[in-house]
Image 1 (cartoon, rainbow, N blue to C red):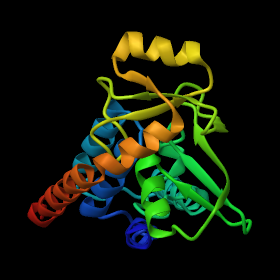
Image 2: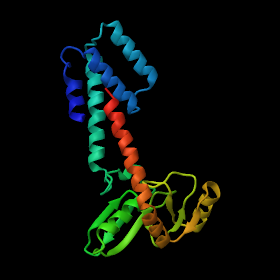
Image 3: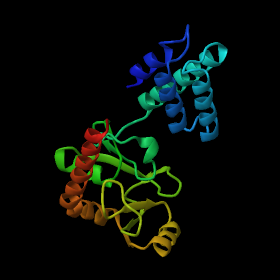
Image 4: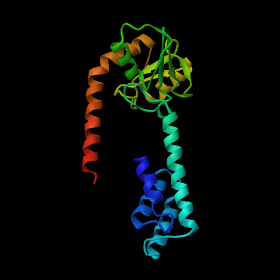
Length: 220
């Protein structure tokens, strides 16, 4: 997708961007928050006024801008760690990210306790040296076994309908419960809850992904 957009962006540099390609570029800039809606509307109006093609330095500047945005996005995704099982990026789920450090020195980066439970179930022969998890508030990694956990509440969990959040302090966990509900739990209770929820959560995830695929198929 990125390669296609780069090609589209640079196709008409010497002359002028076609109407279709220019609108594609402007929409990408809007979606990524690079340009505000007002500037997008002005650029579209300029394009229509010029008969669908814009030439000169403004055109080249726009091409360089979109190419830079797409390249930076590609680099960021390449450097961002993704969950070993669902593929979700760590940058978006630092508040629930789990790292399992095995005795053999290998580590698994996982988006949530849900995916950590999958790893434990698939590799019962592996013993772990340490498990850390993202603090819900600060997003820094903390010892999962020493963390103060909360199960449930009114916030949607990561890969699960019944949320499971970790906090470095008991005060932070209590504050969360007071605001969002749920109940305090130990790490072992959280792991048990993750296994208990696995069947229901798996059905939920499959249903969501099926709906996403159906929407994609309907999109022209």
